[in-house]
Length: 429
Image: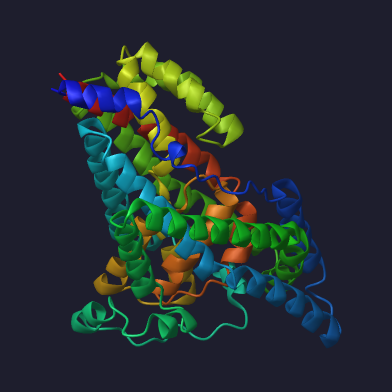
């Protein structure tokens, strides 16, 4: 049962994340054009795969794709650092809002961990039953072979802390970098308010500057994807389309787990019958599918919470907070992408490597706050792949089809948001 102090906190702080005063630059990936470029590039490559094309043409296409990939890579570390600091500071601020916020954050942590562990456990088995098509090997041209040094558990533990954070950044050691900036964000929240605000202002400006750069780069996505897809089509033939379909279904299946988990959570912790929950969620889910935006689905989520007879004081506090800092599918689906590419490259994923990926995925999920799906794809999965020793080159093509798995991401996120509201609301009784 919430005390009067908790109720006042819930009504006085509708959305701590939004009230922090930090808003990120809005950028959009030309999704339709990028997807069309992927299909066109693959199609042209397939049609010309039987011809002896000039080597200069192939090198030029490879150069265009490589430059675009490197332009994306150069923004990852500074952008992740800035978003982590901002996202974690928002989460700490939310935790101070009262017992309802702390219960919400506990549920958030449980869902994110469950999603990461489920994917790490199920993906290898699923890829054994439904193996990746052989034609998918065309996505890995000019990459080193899958041999790697498998770290021991002691080596893994030692890698959690970098003696030189600058050297770790230069070597793109994402695990110690992620931990450092997470601790840095928490430290900022313990500083005097003036000092903390100045540092947060710096990281806010850094994030916006990086987002502007990545926005400029992504406007050239159709050109980069066309060049890369052309090479894949030459190497893989028509099988490239089957490989992409396989990838979309496998990754979306991991999001499906979160969707089912939302129904289970609403039933077990919210006391809501699954059929009643499904009926109440239909309007919000329809908006989620059509907009692929949790923020745009917020009014519909509030309506669904009302249909479920949840307290407005709970839903009007928790749902905006969830939209700001909670991405339920992030660890599950982002880990799925990294594990898919690892399987494609023949890289062995040991428990220690999987644990590193889950840890980074959990922390990075906070930093994807308020970003469009295509942007968070680059920002979130890149660090996970780097932490696991997985090549990130295929990501620049997979981002072109992210519009399809993103439907499952938004659908499951929206459903889980309302399920979490039901659990928090019942805990007040």
